[in-house]
Image 1 (tube, rainbow, N blue to C red):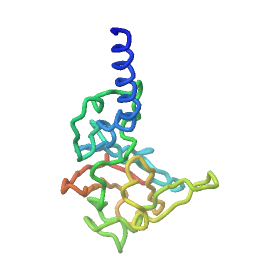
Image 2 (cartoon, rainbow, N blue to C red):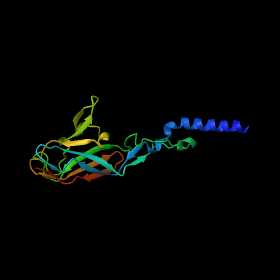
Image 3 (cartoon, rainbow, N blue to C red):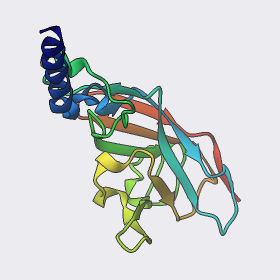
Image 4 (spheres, rainbow, N blue to C red):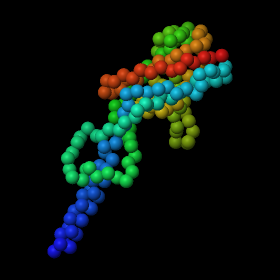
Length: 182
């Protein structure tokens, strides 16, 4: 009798775990951040150099789905969860890049520089395409390589400011180090 009871309890627990597999990592499905930094390839550029940089989150944290269920087995944890596998919880919906100095006659101090920026994106052929920032899905902008190929013609020293507008209304403002073109 005890053996049958133990077998039934064991089977019940195993079925519960099997059917809750999809929820094992739901507590870390998305990632989010409220601070970021700009990582530059270098801040002293020669005439032949292009500026490339990444926007990287600081203090990344992980979030669950919006829908919370309370069931016994949904608190079970997998042996290893792929944190953030669902992408950003609150995606970047707009980006503004400006400089504290005149870049050229068309892009003066605090003018939006988005038209100068391209994003390096991988394609199916394992090659990379350079796509204009305004043509890229901004939800993929974090950790992507961003390029400014043009060189400034007016001021040679710049500090770039980037504002990331997220879908939850949060605006993250970051600044680069001083960049000098030779």
